Image (tube, one colour):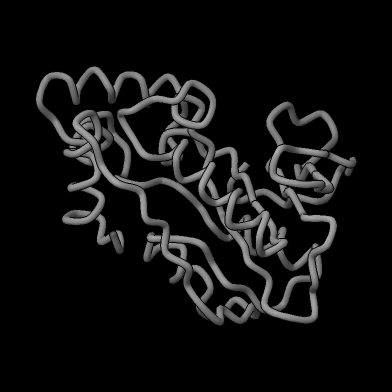
Length: 197
């Protein structure tokens, strides 16, 4: 849905193990099967900087607990932080750094042959990272957020706020230890993509 006008389609109450939220679905139209989502804590205070996580979908990590990446662990830790700070989770449907699940799994196979995550995406004809964070900015503005504290290690997310009309008042780092299965992945994020690990 990158580059298309999106709007709020529906909202509903969503009690979770991290607290009570309202979930909003954003899409170009009501027929969209994979809308972007916003989970807004029911006690959020819009008069102070709101703690926000912009998280791109990673079905293998978020749902299946893949150890090839740290996405699922980042999601869970972010929700824990948001529970304490009463913030907002923006869940963008940008699987595989924006290349989609099928291509992501193809990239897995290339990684098993010796490529790193960036090399695999480029080999498949994509940029190293195809994600668009401006969608999240539009969602935050629609929700009435003006100042935020951003949970991230990604400099691209920080840069997206430049000239956005939203005030980024602080960065909250995510400290996720690496392990045997994702050590190379984490090194590439730091060395090649400039993540603040």
